[in-house]
Length: 44
Image 1 (cartoon, rainbow, N blue to C red):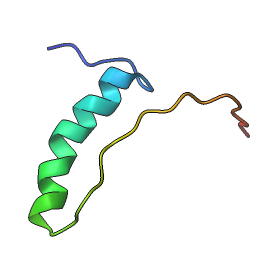
Image 2: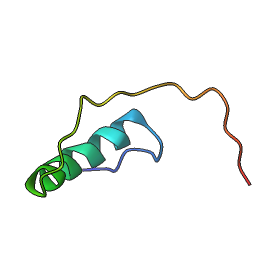
Image 3: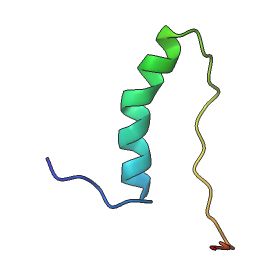
């Protein structure tokens, strides 16, 4: 399966699919995930 591009919503979902069960097993309770549009990015 090809990896989604870095920074894409698909990549975010792929990480979440793996990470959420691990966090749940550790007792971390998460609220509903939200994807928001980023308007300004400062690099450097």
